[in-house]
Amino acid sequence: MNQFKTGLAGLIMICISLPAFAEDVALDTGNSAWILASTALVLFMTLPGLALFYGGLVRSKNVLSILMQCFAIAGISSILWFSFGYSLAFSEGNSFIGDFDKAFMTGIGKDTLAGDIPESLFAMFQMTFAIITPALIIGGFAERMKFSSVLLFSAIWLLAVYVPITHWVWGGGWLASMGLYDFAGGTVVHITAGVAALVAALVLGPRRGFGTAAMMPHNMTMTVGGAGMLWVGWFGFNGGSALAANGDAGMAMLVTHIAAATGALTWMFIEWIRYGKPSALGTVTGMVAGLGTITGASGFVGPAGALVIGFFAGAICFSVTTWLKTVMKIDDSLDVFPVHGVGGILGTLLAGVFSATSLGIFSGFGFADGIETMAGQMKVQLIGVIATVTYTAFVSYIILKVVSLLTKGLRVSEEQEIQGLDIHMHEERGYDL
Image (cartoon, rainbow, N blue to C red):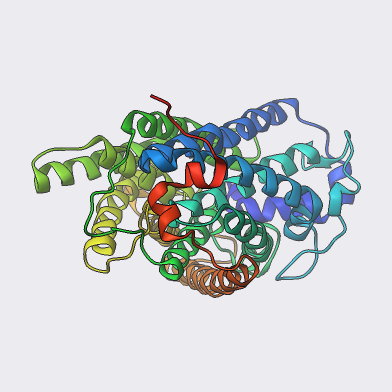
């Protein structure tokens, strides 16, 4: 398990930063087949999973706007990843950003390897992560941002926030060198998306009628269906991050499932006790909280540790969701920050605890190379959280202000918001009954 302890970042440093070494490694068809399947599963999480999950949560007059944003972001992110994103994230560069050696996928052919899988496949697998992360953010400003502002913000944010932090953590950057544990995106995906969504919600302000009018999901069947797709797709998200079809991938899948199940049940029972009835919305939200929280820790903790992580995910994310809406009056429309942001922070910190080998049944698989104590690993995890939160919040705020100037305001007008974004932005209806 020693090579496992180095995590994804160490493996990528070997595979990508040292191409001469990679040429001496033979293609492993079994590993390649698993990452091919994982890549499809992660894209499936966004299209159609996240699109349907978010689409059902908004009001019927805005359902197509959500679906459209998910599809458009998938297209923009893919082209930017091909052009510059992959190179800046995973080429050698320096401790903070890569270089342009692989811009436009230069030097990547059919026989080019990243470790023992095709580099084209590795780049595509990572592209699916670059697609879902900005797509998650739209839940923070759903039902009120101009389509042009969404597209411009997502494009700039991908290159200015997602790409640098990916390099810090997975591309051989400074957090990887410190030994940060983030197996599949606790910091890179969930903290960045959650914090950016919170900043966007604060900058745009709440939806018209927030706090006074009911803004219930218009189609829970769609939401539950999308949630099921997310649960299944997450096995590629976390299991695929092992970059091999081996015991590491198998364990990542097991702990992912346990955390998701525990998060769903925890949220469900809290609602049941507090409100007298469990809701489908709460149950699937707890499931997503469990998945988001285990993501960063999934390669480093055991099944019992995952159970505890899932419980904390359900309980803490539920509390923060309630507090944010009822006390702080912040309209993070689809709960991106309390579920993904808080879940990512919680999971990143708990990875430093449950990776310890001295916790009996709750033991994990050891600390990063050069770190000997839980305190040492926790220090690195905390630094990773603080750096990710601070950088994401500051840069996201700047991007929103720049985009507001370029698009002459981020929000649609009051009349257009009342009418609905489907008709105003796309001249279409989600339902024609």
